Length: 127
Image 1 (cartoon, rainbow, N blue to C red):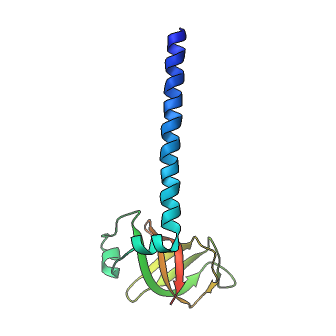
Image 2 (spheres, rainbow, N blue to C red; image 1 turned 180 degrees about the vertical axis):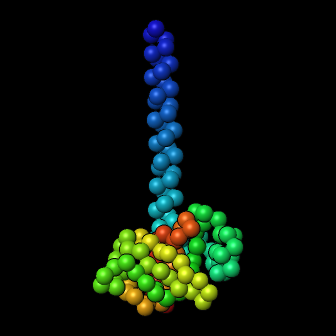
């Protein structure tokens, strides 16, 4: 009985140790990605046709330029966690703003973020 308890305790400790290591690496990766230089280096540019043809993989870091053409905010200001539509030459993309910003309807921007079928913005530069 005591042997089983020791084995169980060791298994639990190993699982805690392994999950702690992987969580630390995930947080480290996330912080490096969110840094200005990290997301800019990792983000790839795709054409409107590539988005429309489903050639952009989910969870891919992307860079896209366009004009903010619509928002769900009543005052037309783009706040953190606001949604907006980014209009490019040949497409429209839903963006969820994950950054603190001072943007408004009509601004021309470059969005860096993660693609989920929509874009979760991690950095936005005004053009």
